[in-house]
Image (tube, rainbow, N blue to C red):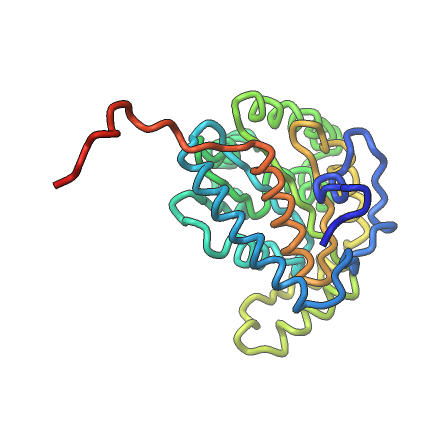
Length: 275
């Protein structure tokens, strides 16, 4: 599959710095040039092979780290994206951190303290399931802190991410975009499946009532914090298979552009024979 005018997936789904964002105009049902799950599955399988190759080089290269941030409304598929996109990569080279309600120790520090601790070291791919953006999303929607506090955090986050980028952390931020109707269908599916009912919380229904508030919060977060050094990508996610494919494409394109190489071997190995 090829994109028109040689457009990359990074360009197609990335938010340009300073660009206006209107989530209501972005179709969460978009499947690009794919017509079927079967077609996309074949392409994703090929992408995973490329990802494994680049990850192996990236780990050995040990010059940069890659931070992948996943943000989304409930049921959009943060866990599923990790499971399906990263399938088959070397687990020694990947860390996954899920950010839930802060612990008492975390509350005793600034909101970025727990985030910085989890940033991957060189050679590693780190995945954040939720992130520091919760502090301009759920914190804002539920009025956990005053507006004059959370409104300053966009600039703080941009400065923090710039600091990371200047210290060899490559950052990719994905917003998994689903519709309100699709969320309802997925929540109902959890209720109807005894094996998935544990994932359902009555609180999910309360959060649904705040959908418009969350959309406003996400819009501001993406619009104010998509930068050259830490871009946001808006991923159509009503179709899980396309969501997985686009995320994998952006990661592979990013690693390819970094061009990680295996380190030069130690000198004087040419004549060694192991007996």
